[in-house]
Length: 439
Ligand code: FAD
Image (tube, rainbow, N blue to C red):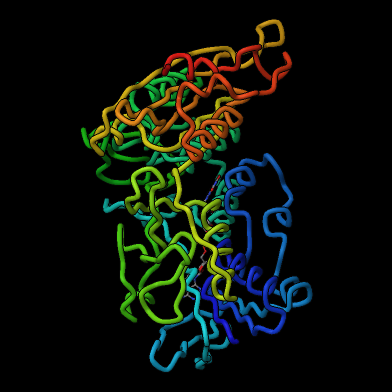
C-alpha cells in the first residue's frame, strides 16, 4: 500500500505514525510545502515572549527523524498542486528547484490544516502587521520585536491566540490594546467574560469589546467610531479558515466554513481519500450537529483515527465538546460543551448555576475559582461548563469534561471521590458545589 499525506504538522504526522504502527510495509510519503514540520504551534506565543528560548523544543523533529525512526518519507518544501482522484495521482512542485512531478497513491490523506483569516480592512499589508499561524509567522514577529522594540501593541481578536499574545506582549514591556468584535473570548458567556475583562483592565490593558476596526495606519488601528488605538505592532488574531482548495477540486463535500466533511472514520465522500485536522468539520458530542472547532488536541486525534482506518481498523471519532483552555497572566480560562447562549439557541430548557469558591484554603494562598455550569432541565444532563480562576482551573474543567462526556447526572457530581489535600483543594471541591446547586 502506498499512502500519500498532504501536510506534516499535527494531523499529517499523526496519521503517518499510526499507519506505520499498524503496517510495517506501507510506503508512506508526506508532502509539506513549508520547511518546518511536526512542530508545537501551541507553544509559539510562549517562545515569542521569551518564556522559553529553546527553538528545538518547539520544532523537535525533522524529516531525518521520521525517516530513520519511522521509515516515513517527508518531503519538505514540496507543494501538492492538484489531485486526480480517478488516476489516483497528485501533482507536486518541488519549491526548491521548481521541478513539477506526479506521484501515485492507493490512499490519500488531506491534512492541509488552516490559514489565518485577514480582516477585510485597509492596511493589513503594512510591515508592522502580523499573523500567527506557523513558525515563519512566529520568526517574523520575534525578529520585528528584536529589531524595532515596539512599545505599543494592538491585538485584533480575543480568542486564545489573541489572549496568549496579550500576555506575551505585556511581558515584553508593551502597552496592549485588545479589540473584540463581540464580547471577550468566544464560547464564554458575557456574565463570565466580564471577569476576564475586569482582570485585563486591572493589568492595564485597554479592552474594546463590541468594536469594529476600519483601517490599520502607520500609528495604529482606527476603530469603528473613528478613534485611534495606537500601535507600533498589530497582531491579527481574528480566526482561521480551512485549506480546502485541493479537496474542492476533486469534489470532496464541504461543510461549515468550507471545511471538509468526513465520516467517523475520517473518510471523505471521494474513494480512498481521507482527511483530518484543522481542515475538517467535526461534530458536537452533545447536539450531534456539525461544527468547525480546529484545535491541536483534535488534529492529533483525528490524524491517528485516519491512519488507523487506512490500515484496516475501525476506529470511530466520537465528536468533540469543543473544550478549550488558555492562560492569561496568572488567570486561566476554560470552557467545554455549550455555553448558556448556545444552549438556548439550540432550544434546550436551560438551567444555569454560577458559583465562586476557593481553589484551596486561604491559609495556603487560596484564590477564587468561578464555575458556571449549564444543564438541560428536561433530560437532567449537563450541557457545558466555563471555569475561570487561577491554579486548578484545568483540573475542575477536565472533571466536568469527563462528567459531560460520560453523561453523569448533575446531582452525581457530589458523589465523585475527588482528591483533597490543602495544597490542592478544599474538603468539598468547587465541582461538588456545582452538583449541589444543580440538584
Ligand atoms: P496545520 O498546523 O495547519 O498544518 C497543515 C500543514 O499542511 C501546513 O504546514 C501547510 O503548509 C501544509 N499544507 C497545506 N497545503 C499544502 C499543500 N498543497 N501541499 C503541501 N503542504 C500543504 N490547539 C490546542 O489544542 N491548544 C492550544 O493551546 C493551541 N494553541 C495554539 C497557539 C497558536 C499560536 C496557534 C497558531 C495554534 C494553536 N493551537 C492550539 C491549534 C493547533 O496548533 C492546530 O490545531 C494544529 O496545528 C492543527 O494541525 P494540522 O496538522 O491540522 O494543521
